[in-house]
Image (tube, rainbow, N blue to C red; front, top):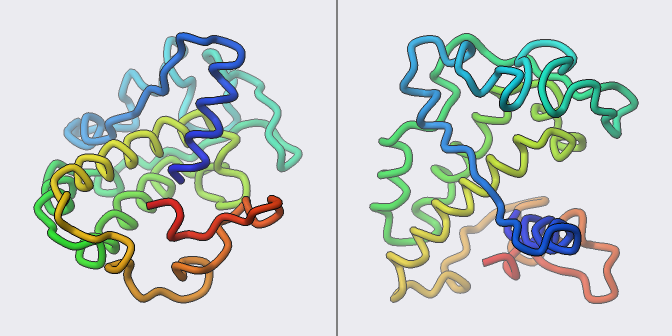
Length: 185
């Protein structure tokens, strides 16, 4: 999602030049016994975590699936990123070795939040999508900085379908110069 995040940040900067992307460190909620009761799900921050979002800055937000922004935040923390998850990625030495770990960290938060975040076609409707992916990008960049001797382009893991290195990166396949997955490294 790195290119997608870059495009989002560029669009934001056209409106607010000094803006920077924030990230959501989901390890914080993971460490709470009742993460679904975190202040994150309050009117002050992201709004309510269950059903249509009717509180906070994103209340009654129209989603591109025809409904309102909604969430089904889980009541158990095991769907959130742990410090051990992050350390497993950062201690890796090859992209192929950490690919599955990073995907797992990425995917389980989508499941935890639910609603549009749980649907690949509509997850960008939720502002948490951008904050979550900025956190994934932060982890990825730290891995890259720790792996300066690794040739990520030649170590791209064997993958099939939409994750294949030469597959068109979605949703950028309609560009004049289509972007491939490997271009996102």
